Length: 378
Image (tube, rainbow, N blue to C red; front, side, top):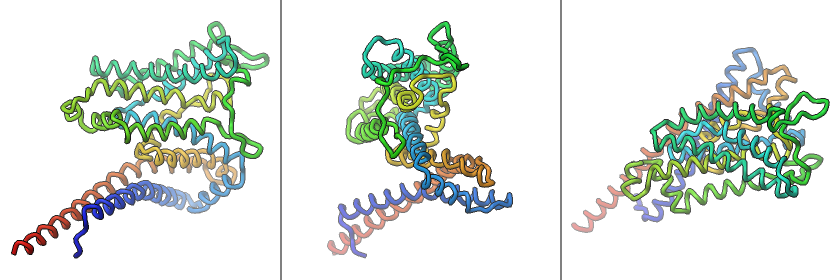
């Protein structure tokens, strides 16, 4: 066997890691499709037709394509917010409350601020980001000062955020009830304060797509090309080892939670500034919890989470056509649930197999090198 140079060995190991990284989500998707098909077959339905129906539905209708893309944008922000916590080994379940409270307070500030429309828009975004960071910062302080689990703290803060929102949008506080409507809102922002969209035929994609891309790039650069990113990953992997290298675990917990909450504040902005232009009691909910699943599916990688968000949005919006063709729309929910379970198992299995394979390859190379050295010595 020809001995590989260190550069060739490194290149081959990198190639294998890339293949393994792609294999896990593809395996999880294949398992989800297979199990869902078995369920359909057991209920007497065609096990393959729903998939072709969903693909055809999205491919045929431009308005559905826009809905999928717009949903992907909000899901991506949610996944990024969760992923920063995951990198620090923190479970920020409070993303849901952080983005909803941020959107509510941001809408109130934007409506009541006596300023030109563009400044109103900027004020809404900045306020939402600050509120999200402050709300997650409460959980961070409780963790580093009193040892309170961030899981418990953020769950409770979600409930408190819901109560605060309910109070703020009352008519005698900051709420406004449009004439002839039963809905109570925070007041509609002027058109000059709307975030410009991206034309797509007769429809419009959220302009926050650009911000989402920039956030994804910034997230990757921060984690992989900065000292802060190294400290964050080190503290998340081993607090004691990070402390020995001079990294304060408590400080990193606070910073990671603040950054997670700040990104969470952006989740509601595409809808608020690009669609509803006001905050109402039935403002879209659930993005924070969906972000957890997408972050797991994308393995906290910006590209992986982008594909995960797109897949999730596709299943959400394409499910509409199933009811019209004799299939239950819950099929897509079943697929989403199976994907989450399968991806955790698939990642762990593939990672273990890949680690064994790399250890064997490195061991074989070392053995070959040792044998060659012995032959030279003789």
